[in-house]
Image (cartoon, rainbow, N blue to C red; front, top):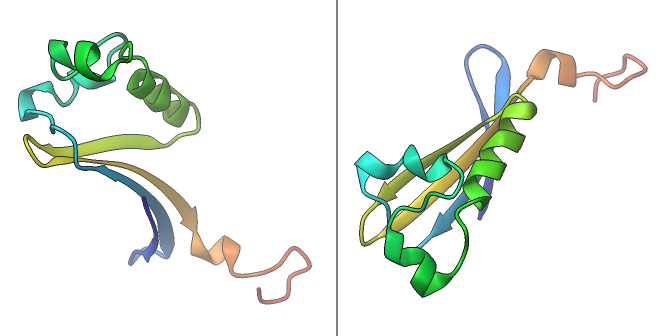
Length: 102
């Protein structure tokens, strides 16, 4: 897992949380399907590794409720990277509650 803070030209910053695995990877045509309840990238996955296919659906729903996006990049045979980016306005964050610079 990596956590990075990345500023952008509009004065916002994103805290990006990346979770990487070195598993079996996911074919491009299955990337959106894995976020559906009870879906997995490969039907044999649940028999081999266990799981019901709910974790990613629940994770994406929770992110959506907080106004965040959960994205995935994957390469079959190499693994996957799941990312949540949290954007915040740097101008608002640059002072403390009493108005002094933070």
